[in-house]
Structures are given as C-alpha cells and as structure tokens.
Image (cartoon, rainbow, N blue to C red; front, side, top):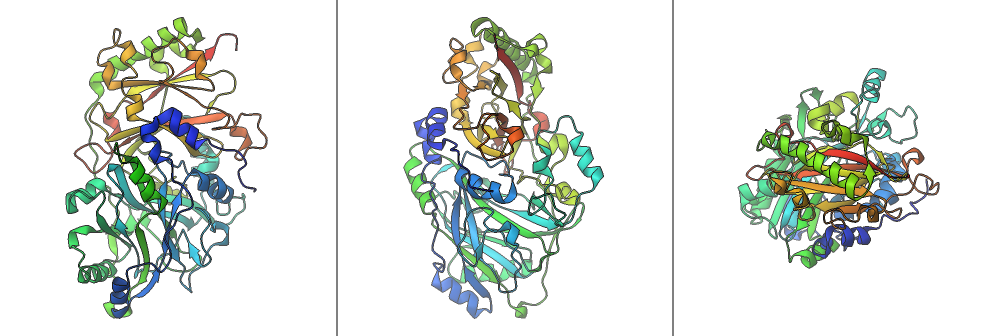
Length: 543
C-alpha cells in the first residue's frame, strides 16, 4: 500500500477549531527524537556494574502523519488516535535473540536500523523512560499495552459483534491479524490495556506537582527487577517518590497474560507518553518540549544473580466515580427539542429525529455498554484499540457527510458538571479510524447559552454541529463558533478513489467525546452516572 496522498489539514483544523491559544498542541510535530546512547553515563555505569545488560534507546513523536504514513499502511487501522495531542513513543534496541515480526516493522513510525517501537519482554526485563516532564497542562501519562498475540478468534465471537446493533466500530478494526491481509497468520492485533495509567494525578499524589519536573518510569513484569532498578536510580540520587512502575501483570480475570519471552509466539508490547492541552501561556514551551522531548530510554535485562523472578499478580483496575448527572436528564431532552425547533425554523433543516428527540442516536461507551476492556479483548483475540481507564470514551458510529447531512451533538459538558478535567469532542475519519480534529471544552463552553430561555442549566450543556459547510447554519446561535466544517481536505468524499483508507467508508466520520479524569480522582468518570451524548441528524431542504 502506498503512502497517504491526501492531507488532513492539521494547521487549518488547529486554527479554526481550537483557536490560536490552543494551536500549540498541534504544532512542532516533526520527526523529533533523542539520540541513542544519550543516557546518563553514571546511571548506565551503575546498572552495568550491578550486572544489568543495558541498551540505550530514544524517543519518537507519533502524530497524525505517522498514523497515515505508517500505521494505516502496516495495520490498516489508526487505532482511533487522539488528535488532542501527539504521543511520545519510547524506541528500544532489539536484543540479539529477540524475534522481530517483519509484518509489524515501522507500525508506529520509521525507526533506526536495529530499533523497534514494539518490543518483547523476558520476565527479568525492564524499559526505563525518564527525564523532564512537559510544561504545565491538563494531562500527561505513560501507558503500556499488549500490542499483539498468537491466536485466532472464533466464528461465534466474530458473529456476536458483527450482529450487535449498537456496535460503533466497523468490524475490520476489531478483528484483524498481523499482517492485516486476511490470511490465517495466527497472530492478532490486540492493543489492550494491562493496567491503569501513570498519569499526572498519580504522579502528583506520590511526588508532588510533576509538570516540568524530572520523573522516572519503569515498565517491567518483575518486582525483582523493579527493586534492583530502583536501587540503582536511588544510588544516583533519585528520590524514591519520583520513581513510578508500570507493572505488567501475570494474569487477568480471563487467565494468564503471556507468554513472555523473545520468541515469535510471545506477546509484544507498545508504550506511549501522552501530553495534552498545555496551560494558557505555555504553548510555545509545549511546542519546544515536543520538538525535542528531554526524555531518555533504557532497555535493561537483570542478571541471574538477582535470584528468582517474582512476577506481579493479577490485573486490577481502580474504581471510578462520578457526580450523578441524572438531575439534568429532563433539561437534556428540552435542549434537544429546542435545537430541533431552532434548526428547522431558522436554518430550514429537517429531521425525523425531531418528532421524538428522546430517541435520537446515542453515543456508546465501549467499556460500560459493550465490555471492551483489555482482559476481555485478549480473551477473544479482539483489538481493544488502546483502551484505558482515564476517560469515558464516547463513540458514535460512522455517519455520512456527502448528501447535505448536518449533525448536532448535544450533551452535558463534563468540565461544567465536575466530571472531567478536560473534554474533547473529536472528528474521526472512519476510513482510517483516525482522529483528525478536536474541539476542546473551552470551545464548547457556553454553546448552549443561546437556548437558555427554553432550557434550565444551559451552562452545563454544549451544542455543536458537524457538516461539510457550516454556512448552511447561518442564523443559528453563535453559528460559526458552534459548528465544524469537515472539509474534504480533512476527510475525503465518498467519490475520492485516490484517498487512503477503506473506500466503503470514505465520506463518513465517527464523532467521539472524551471526558478525561474526574477532578479529585486518578481516573475517568464512571459513565453510568454521566448522560451519554446524543446526535440529531438533519438534512437540508432540497437535498
């Protein structure tokens, strides 16, 4: 498959959707990396004196460009990447005895010869990522997922999800092999969570405010290795409170996680550090940090002299809470009715949804509504698309754009109900399963105020429209600000045969809404207490 020829319009999306104050999160996204062998000499020397094998690595920035130039051509799936921020990927040097799947090379961007963005782990291995954290912002985290595993799904599991009416994700993204060519390769894409993320709240509770500070992360399946690495770090003057461990569990609720090792049958992993929504005034510093992340990577193998490997126990996820939004349910229905009335009377749109707004399409939380979390996905060889517990990730099914459709997404704004630190309403290209644009909570706040005469608590809601050309909504409350034009530069038309991606899904987008970290907790809000987003579908008169 060739490289993607179309552009997703990132700078344009930045300026028109987010406003200039937020553009820093999309700029400075070149192929920046730190230089291999740039790790601290003292730490490397100390580890090697302790008997560790040590291989310095480097970091790469993963952006929308990597999605379309590498991930989709290799995996036929961009894994619903979050367009609110690029990711920093640790790139590690392969061990001499490590199997490197030729079908997955450069899946997350082009790496230097002898290095890889996905890696296997022996029981005594560890990946260490450390350095200066980014400037102040709303969110940062490190997470490791299982990338792929040996196995095949059963026809029963496949048919179950193929026949699920509220399934938001097309089947080719949920069940596929490596390589994704329909062959019986015996290896499936997994991208499934192995535990809770180490995010800025976790860091702050252990080490104090962490943006702009030096922090150290260890990814390992062995408490024995973790203890030895921590000892080496502390010998170099690193405070124990500044060290965090991502524990690769030995099992989950469905059975063992594995096998570990360097062989072709072993599971492999991928890690990512994510930084989102710099604080006001920090955009230039955020661009600089992303352009050359001051982070270092080490790949370690502990010596046999440490004794028997002590594996971590079973996977558990932290409980989630939320402020109950049930008291706003009548207000939401009134807002849906008011949006219908204004769109029909002022913009001369029509909608069958407006006869019964309460039956309008709802977005789905895949974790709550479908049970799609790491353990379940691994058990049936399904791709979990990088699941995590730091947010509610509401998803809408693919929606067509090229026959004059106009969509209004209506919901509570979780930052105003006390259920999110930040929220992001996203446009996803269905044909790539790729995030292409975001509207953050500052751009959504106040968007329902124009309906305040008909709706109580209007300040706790948002209304946002998506269509090919927002000019059709002229006259609606604050219409330029409350609408996103999904141009063909952002997302191809259904007639564009030259565009990358699944031709059957060209001209369609998937809306999504992420509500990140309930204030006062380390995790996303509990979705059963939060009102799901609703989608009203309109057509233009004469279309």
